[in-house]
Image (cartoon, rainbow, N blue to C red; front, side, top):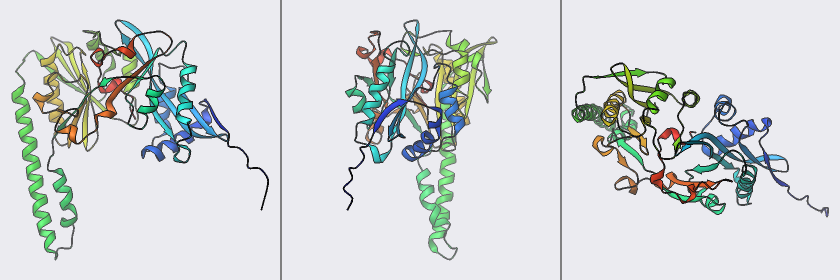
Length: 375
């Protein structure tokens, strides 16, 4: 039996290096179950116009990266003043090295590194795993921002459950039953979609002065113009054409835009992101929702185009009248019994300057999906 002393494990925390990218993407897939490309990493971190470096802290064990604390840089507007903020995101530690204080050490490193200069503050919506660690390192809980969901295919699960039966051998009696139920589900789905469309159209008034234009690529300059029509006082992402061009270049997402024009001038806009299963309302403009009628017209157009999706999601102060269009918040029944709104609890931490954000109320902030880190 060997009596030589066992080498001590060396754990360190350092800044990101270019050679770390492959390990980052590999661990991301392991931890989050989603594969992300080098193009996505380049877009999110290297091409971000609001940081002059890759804002990622790396934890290593014996020289090998085993954890990452990343930050999503963005410009934020506070009472007319523009400041840079970092939103913690994509935080991960390999399962073999959890419970050894690496998350805390990466937090300490980031706070010390960014205590002076830029960014001015951190804010984020941590999940239940990282929330306690944030609070332990000086983040303060501000409040919960609701997400809204509009179910559009309540019998979709029925169709899924009958797939196995309908694909059974033709001699199996369950096959005929499965096919009949699947056909009924398809018919009901079509009827529900038609009912939604008719109901939505009845809710909006006729405004002959409005013209609706659709864009496969959101028009950054037009969106900035509409944003500047009425800039809110609340804390929110500063929306410029440069921000929109970068934000909508995300290679992992597909976006479309709807713009309402009156007398040839854009007065309102709405942006969606969608998959085969669901659609998201990621942006409405102007942010003050003063053009509520125009935004509702755009919403109806977007809902009509996505009537075949299982549900539509919106976040924060995106819709002027969510319940009117059957969007239900996940902070109230019935959705609060099924979903966890904790994942959208806002935390904030000042850095250097005393901005008072840690003592602010959630009403002092204004969010759409674009204000959040995106995966």
